[in-house]
Image (cartoon, rainbow, N blue to C red; front, side, top):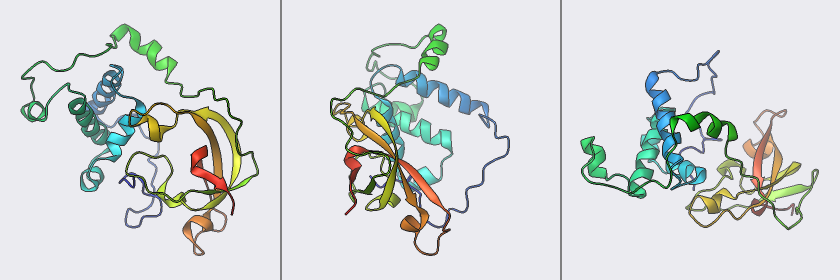
Length: 220
C-alpha cells in the first residue's frame, strides 16, 4: 500500500536531521511501549509483517502527528482488537470488561534475554535458483497494492543494478496477511539518484533497497 510511512521523494517534511548521541529512549513510557509491544507479539497471534502493516495503516494525519513509539502503541491497539484480546470500548474505558482471547504463549521475565538474543530469523530454504545475479540490470514492477509491500513507492517502475543476492527470505507481502511465508530470493538493488529523483538531484547519489524477486524483471 502507499502508506504514510513511505516518504521518499515527498516534499514538505524537511531534511533528515539525526540527533547527535541520540538516546535509546526519550522518556520512560517509550521503554514500556517497546516492552509491551514485544510481549504482545510473543503471544504468537501475529507476525512482524502484520505488525508493520498495522503501523502503516494508520490514517496519515494520525501517523504524521504521532511520535515513533506512539505509532507502535496505536498499531498494537489495532492488533489487540483485531485478534480479540480487547474491544474498542475497553480501550476507551481503560479497563477490561470481559474475558478476551487467550494467548498461545506468554513471554515470562526470565525468558526475555534469551528470546531477544535469539531474534527472529526470517531466512528460509527455497528449491529454486536465484533468477538474478550481481551486476544484472533489473527493473522494478510498477504496482500499487492495497496490502503490505516492502517495495518503496519511489522505486517502482525504475531501473537499477543488482548489487548482491542475499538468499531467500519470508515474503512480507504474503506473510502480513496470513497467506503463508512464501519465501523467495532477496536482492540488494542500487539505483542512481537521478533515476529516482530526476535531473536536478545530486549526480553522486545512489539509493539501495532490499527487493524480493517478484518485485523485479530483467531490464527492458
